[in-house]
Length: 627
Image (tube, rainbow, N blue to C red; front, top):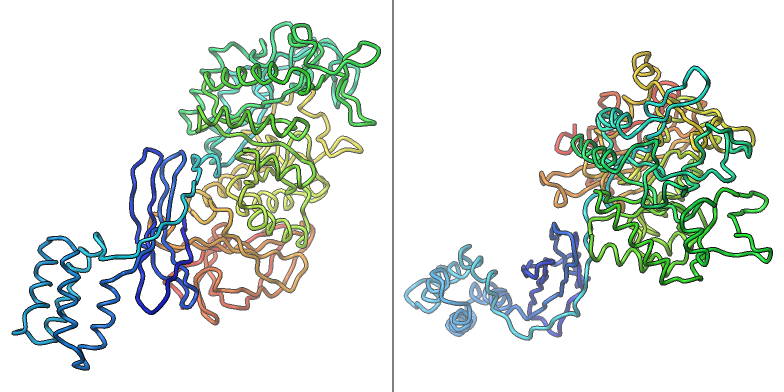
């Protein structure tokens, strides 16, 4: 992390500035800060925060008496001004610098009139002496800033590639009589190696709980479910249990924990859904009717978004018995944490009180700082921001509906700058509820473009199963896939699609490989927009200074995307090279990480992007190899 402070004092004497950093275990380290842009009094240093928890820091400023003396001595001694007095002052200062060999030798040299002035001054510049004084500055007039806290979360809270699938569809089979046999956690585990091979690190499961029978929805959200229709997983609760139970068709608790362990062996973490709503058959309805809203006729109010009605779902009323509801939900969350779940995707958090989320996330993270919560809230900006401020580590965003160059530029500035202090966007390209017109009518190029933008614009992105098969047919009049998996089984033959060459899986694998190899893509705030002469060519860079990388080398990428999936575009691209470590007018080599092509680029560059063959460049800047 970069640390900075404005520090100054009266007069001309020099000052020193240190970062005093205390880790979560209470160990303090000192980091000498350097002067930044001349004339601004800004001081800065970079420090690694490599433990989860609360770090504390203060800035210590002081008069740097040795640096001030050395500055004056370097001017006066060559001019033969006050030579003995200057050396006498220097030797006196060294008495405050400890008793190291370097200090003793320098003090002796400064006080030795038999040596030449140049030799005595040279002793004051000895590297070993400088190192000794850095370790123990000769200072005065110390002042300390207030203490500040930085809350550090684990990497997965801010970096990740998510893959969503319904476990009941993996391995599902249709019987001869037209009924279905559900997939299970055991059959779903067979999908994990392929998901991991594509480079994803989180597998997200929609609700895995028993599903109510009352008002169960049928195919395509119809109201006439048959006896063998599985229903929506979000209609939680039945005779088999509620939010702390597993749907019997999926298996047992032991089967679930075996699935979590199988995921871990492939490098995947399991995220589950936390949907705080009930079917009419949920045990809470009979055990705690006070947790719901009762209408004048005595019935319990079901969920509505007029004119839409959701008779299969009862919302909780958090104003009725808030203490009891909070205690039960905390118990449920801790139950799943105990079974190995460390990531929760929270359904519709914007329909619950903010103070509840602030309380729940604090209670959970105070005990389990490794747990991550993703807010699935497609709502008004102020509410989305407030949920992030209440403690959600990640948030869904407006990305799916931002498709033109102008829309995307505005969105990218919002997530990388305007909201970035508190809001971490998870850029899902599609969901069971969202199949945008862009994907419905854009063909294969649209799927490639959206995946590339999501994977490169933010450190967290996600894909809902079926995206790699280019599923683009919507239920008429909606943004949902036809024959939606929310209401029926959808087994897919992924292997056959790959064998026939009609799968996007290899491309998704490439994107995740590029993300893994380029740390610039694992940062949010380092995005800069550039320019093109075409209204459909979007250009942005992601740059990471070498001080933030393990290798010490710069990492810079340029993403140039034709966001019109129906055309070939030719244009000039104009770059501000200072945004990725070069000077105005410099030339530099770039390599397209998707095609392997090499180019020499500069401030102005010709680009041709055919949406049908190559809609996007991901250009890696070759530092130190400019022609």
